[in-house]
Length: 314
Image (cartoon, rainbow, N blue to C red; front, side, top):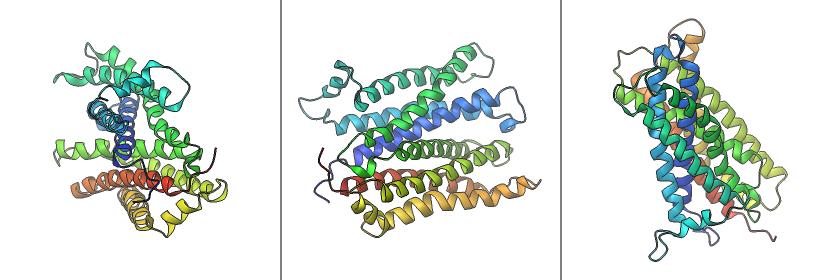
């Protein structure tokens, strides 16, 4: 491994899990607020979609945060509470702001998830007011958590490959897309094959749009690194033709973006032309699985390639 690579799998898993969990929370809240009251939207399944997103958001972000604490060395003997140093002094540093952002998000997301926890939870029940209030907070907070993972990298001035205004946007769209994918794949396991396809169609449309924005963000991120950021040529070479090339082109571009986009377009087109959305059950599993795998590999490539870049003096 390259001598300058200090951030490895724990920080990559944090970016991936926290982003996907935050994305699932945002999608859950959006579907709850927009879908209820319209029986045709999501085929009447907006509450069940929102419930899945809410219940997976907290554990994903929580596990991801545990990996961040691991990276900070807090699981070493004698340093178990080292991470608490992030809260003893409030500063304008990205790490300090991000730590408090995670605390606030986890608090709101936990209350939001609890409103869905009872087996008989339903729209209009006793928790409906709390649920909708938390949903309105989840959208900006979840988006901020997803964006923060890119801001944290961009705040390292000695790694020019990360110093791009497009990195937070790239991670945001990837987080939302993987969040939708996580909800989609869980619905496949929970629902019978005979259930209506309207909800799956709506989720697929949303995900297709997010993939397009993610592709555009990735292109602009790489273009910015190539044209405007000094001393990042090592990283560009690594992902285009070097040691990370096959991982980037196959894992990110083909598996994570092109394959799910083409497959979704294949099954969305008949519906847009007045027909029916009839994606086979196997495709409903393959597409979100590819998106999730691609989302993880994207963060792996960005984190590793940024450290391949030769450090610059401050």
